Length: 475
Image 1 (cartoon, rainbow, N blue to C red):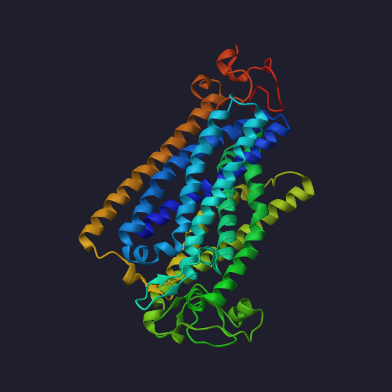
Image 2: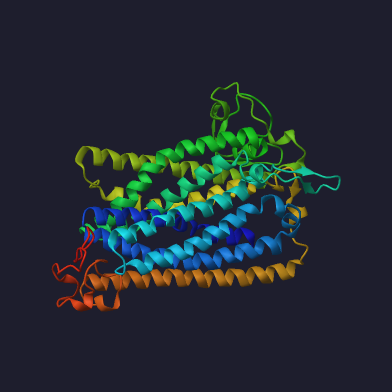
C-alpha cells in the first residue's frame, strides 16, 4: 500500500517542486520582452500548477495518514527525533497554498512586475517542502542526533544533527535537480508532440524551448550529483551499495554488472559483466575494496530478489540519465551552431519520450533508496517488521483497495481536467471560445469582453500605469 501511494504521489512531485520556477521563468521573459505569447504560456501553466497542487493535496494527505496508521512502531519510537522534517513540509505546504492563490488571483488584478515578484516565493516554498521530506528520508538512511537508553528508546535528541545527516546534502540536491529536469522534460514533451503534429507556431516553439533548456542545462549536473550520491552510499551504506551493484563477496577488482539477476548462492545470472569497473566507480581505482552482501547476516541484508529489484532500478536510472545527456548535447550543439532548434523529427520524438523517461527515473530513484535499505526502516536501528502495524491482512487489503480506487479516480480526474483545458485553449486559439477561457488571452491589458474582435484583435489602448507586460494579443 505504501509503495503504491508513494509511486502515485511522486509522479506529481516534480510539478509541485519545479513547475512554479519554470512558470516564473516564462513570466519574466514575457515581462522583460513585452512578449504576449510568453505571458500567455505563463498564465496557462499557472492554471495547470493550481490543478496539480489540488490533486497533490489529496495524494499527499493520504500518505500523511499512512505514516501513522501503517508504521506505528516507527512513528511511536522515532517521531520525536525525525518528525521536524514533516513539520517543515507542512508549513511549506501551507505557504505554497497561499502563494498559489495570490499568484492566480494576481493575473489582470496587479501591476505586472508586482504580480511577478509576489510569485517569486513560490519556488522557495516548494524547495522548503522538499527540504522537510528529504530531511526525514535521509535520517532514515543515516540516523543520528540521539542516544539510546537502556530500553532502546531514543533520548537526548539533537535536532540539528537529526536534520542534517550525512546523506542529507547528497540526497537533497540529487532530488531537487531531478525534480527540475523531470518537470522541464515533461512540459517540453507536450510541445514536442505538438511540433511533431505540425504545430510549428511561435507558441509551441517557445513552450518547448524554455522548459527544455532548463532541463538540458541541469542534465549534465545531475550526472555528477548521481555519481556523488552513489559514492556516498558506498561509504555510508555499504550493504545498500552492494545490493545496487550485485556484489556478493567483499573484494577488490569487483566487476560491474549491467542488469542481470542475483541468485541465492551469490552468483549473477544474465547481464553484461564489465571487469573491475565497480571498484573503479567506487574509489577511482581497481584496488578499491567493495563490501559484499554476505559480509553481514542474511537477516541484515536485502534478499536476492530485493537486491535484483534495486539493481535494475539503479541501472535503469543510470541508463536513462546517460541517454538524456546525449539528448541535451544534441540540443546544445544545434543551438550553438545555428541558434535554432534541431530540425530532425527524431530529436522531437526523443524529446517527447524524455518526459516519460524522466518520470521513470524518479520512480527508480525511490525504489533504489527504499528497497536498498531493507530489511531496515531506520537503518541498523529498526527493522520493517518492528515498525509495521499489527492490523490483520484482510483489513489492510480492504484499505489498499479503497486507496487504489481513490487514487485512480483522482488521477483520472486530473488527466480529464488537463485534457479539457487543452481543448478549451485550442478552441480559444481558433477564436471560438475566448469568452469561456480565462487563460486564452494575454494576461495584462483590457479584458477580452471589452475588445471588439475577440482574441485576434490588435493592440488595444493600455490601462493606466502601463508596464512592460501591458501588451494585448496572442500568438
